[in-house]
Every structure is written in C-alpha cells, then in structure tokens.
Image 1 (cartoon, helix red, strand yellow):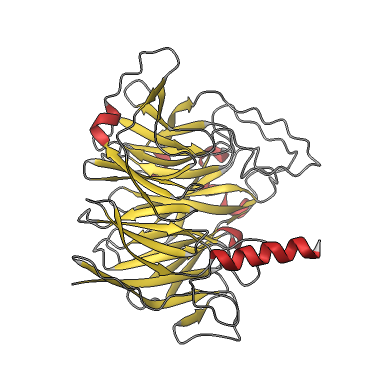
Image 2: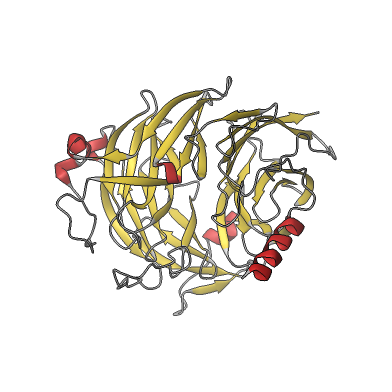
Amino acid sequence: MRPFFLILLFNFFINCQNLHADKNNVAVGLDSIKPVGQFKKLMLKQRIQAIDSTKLDSLDVFEPTINSPKSVIYSKDGNKFYVNSLEGFATIVFDSKTLKKIGVIKHVFDIRNKNLFKNNETTAFDYQFKQQLPDFNTFKGKPVEGCLSHNGKYLWVTYYRRDWDENAESPSAVAIIDTETDQIVRVIPSGPLPKMIACSPDNQYITITHWGDNTVGILDISSQNVMDFKYISHVIIDERLTMNYQSDVKIDRDNECGNCLRGTVFSPDSKKILVAKMGGNGIALIDLTTMKYLGTITGMKQNLRHLVINNNDLILSSNKYGFVQKATLKDLLHLDFSNKNKIITYEKWQTIHVGKGARTIDVTNDGKYIFACVNNDCKIAVIEASSMTVVDSISVSKFPVGMAISPNSRQLIITSQGKKDVLFAGNAVSVFEIIYN
C-alpha cells in the first residue's frame, strides 16, 4: 500500500507543480499575471480557511464553520455572499466589503421547526423513504447549490441528502431563506440527491435537478407567499433510475447516478430548460409549455458540469476533459427533435482547454470574460469570451469547485472543497479583487 500511496502523492504534486505552497501544502497565488485587454489581473484579498489555526498567512482568516465549502452565492445587491458549507450543515453569511462573518444559517431541523414544513410534508411526487423513522423531518441537511428568486428576496439551497440517508436514495429537501433576515422560512421536500437549482428569468418557476435518479422537479413560484409555492411537474430524462440499494452497503452516489444531471439553466424567455448530463452525454432540453422532455443535444465534449448563458451564447464546462465551450443559444433552442431517438448532434462549438477538472463557471456582467474553476490544476482560468482564449490564470487553494462573481464584476469568490484523501486541502474560501485597466 505504501508504494501506491507515494505514487498518488507524487502525481498530486505534479498536478499542482506551478503553485506556491506553504508548509501546509495549501497553494495560493497572491497575484496573477499577463494582463490582456480590459481585464488586468486578479488579486487575492483574503482567504477564509479552516485548515490550520496555528499557521496563518497575512491574508488568512481562520473560520471553523468553513467545512467542505461547495458553492457561493451573492445577494442581489452584492452586499453579502453566502457559502454553502456541505459537511458543516450550514450556510455561512459574509459581508462582501469587510469580509467579516455576519451570520450562520444552520440546516438542522427537529420538532421545533415544524412550522417550516407545510402541512408537515415529508416527500414529493411518489418518492418513498427507505428508512423507518419516527419523524422524517428531524434531520440535518447538507447544502450543495443555491439560487435567488423574487428579485433577490429568497435564496434557495438544495440538500445533497438528509444526514441519516447514507446512500441518498430517499427524498431530500430544499431550504428557502429570506435574505433580509437570513432565516429559513420554508423547507420543501425534493427527490433524491438534488444538486443544481435554477430560477426562471420571469420568476414563475424553480427547477430542481435530481442528480440521484435522472429527474427534474419544477415548481410554480408565481406567488409572493412562500407557502403557496408548489410542484407542477416531474420530468424524467431518458429513464428514471431505480434505487434498490442494500441498506448495509455504502454506495458511491457521486458516480452511481445514471445521467448524473448537473448544470441547469432556463432560456431567456423562460420557455425551456437546459440540463447537463454529467454522467451521460449531452444536454437535455425540457419544454415548459408542455412540461415534457424534448430530447438531448450532443456534439460537445462529454462530462458536462456547469451551464451558463452569456448574452446570445450557451457556455459549458467539461469537467473530465478540461474544456470550456460555447455555442449560439438560439440554434440549440430551435433544434427539431421529431426524430424517434430524441438525439441531435450539434457541432458548431467554440472550444478552449483550461485544464482537467473544469467545474463551476461564471461570467462578468458585461459578458466579456468567463471565469472557470480548474479543480485538478488548483487554479482559476480567465477566458476572453469573444475569442475563447485564456488570457490569465491564477493559483488557488486546492481544490476549487464553486465560484461567484459579484454583481458589479469587481469581486470573485472561490470555494475550495478539498478531497478526503489529501491532507491540508480544501476548507477554504478565497476572495479576489478583479482589476481592470
């Protein structure tokens, strides 16, 4: 076992060989280089970490609530940002100017929180619990992703699973947080293992993408009252995954997930939903008029992780192969799926390689630059959107997965989740200033 471990350790250092490492092997670039065009550079302002309280760099702040940070979301006005601490069962709230922690939203529920569950609801659609428990709404939720609705009033947060659902095969849930008070105001059950969540531009719908079983839940959120929000459709992508796992066998649900549905966006007119098949191949298209799955678009790189819309383009990240691609959104939305196999190959993609492990991507508010988390290489890549060329990169704490650009595109937040088998990695949130010429 020891030689094999040494080989793995050597390979890891090769992957991150360009980074500046401190004694804890936590690599952070203080300044990026190669200014091109309007964009000049990224400058690290602070790293909020829970790696080591005894060794802090000048820009480090130790914060023990940062426990496997999965994603980050800005408030509508940009004054706050929310970090989903997956293993900490909490969403941590920070002031984006002072970078001070101003709140902790705990995703922990018992009988005292009964009012958050409408009519004591525990499940959605026809999902059944595999466990025998006295109260399914007594649990801790593991926050994954989030989105805003109602002009920023509500923050929605998906739970990877309820803490006692080891194989993520039972219904999970989604929390709705009032961003004025930073309090949870409702918890809605979901299907198994929800990851991505998105709000339609017209604020009529929320879609919850179930990584766990190839399905998508769609809610009507047209009301201003959170207790009026309700499911209106349950869309199956290709085939619903059957989950008949043995209770005494631990299943790797990061890979045992069928299509492993991930990145999710609405079309600008709120009439269609695009869903990335990270474990399958292509992008699934859902028609909101009929609430039906139309088919799958292929032709891009595989292992799709994230989707964003940038003006007239759809941007995607290909995790395993390390690419960022773009295509004309209108072309994709108007493809004809009348053929029986529901698969269309579209080949007009512009492609740039950024490094293996391309995870979350985001775009500046003017649409000029795409930022990408490059997990395996422990860096952030900056891409000029028009030419699809990398104009800069900067090292960041291992292993970056989540990011958000502030509404004014002057600040960038990166969450580094880390990996179980790598010591002194992850559990860090890096705050960068985006500097322009």
